[in-house]
Image 1 (cartoon, rainbow, N blue to C red):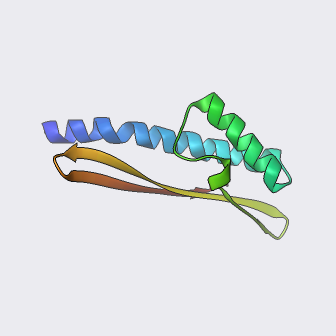
Image 2: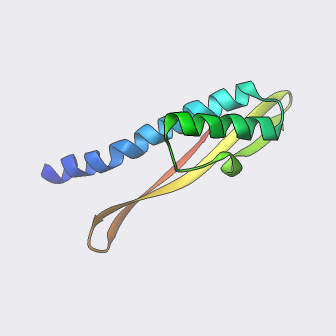
Image 3: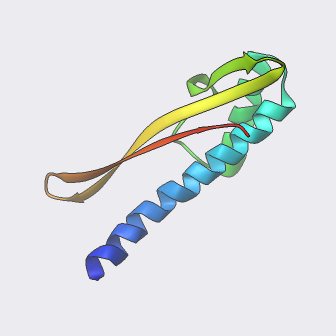
Length: 95
């Protein structure tokens, strides 16, 4: 049971960061019409929301018809003990 509590304590901040990134991606996709505007909007949100995992340069920005699609992907490594790590792969896109 204690192992699960420790694991949850280590994973929760990464999930919170992912949710902040997703929110920033959605706002950036709505606020800009060019790749540069979207990346700049995302970087402003990054500064305000205090996350470090990715920056505007890490976003994949494309168009699907008239809709702007902003996608992101990153990995988080969490040290468990000794040589053991937990690898979390986060992926997402704007809604």
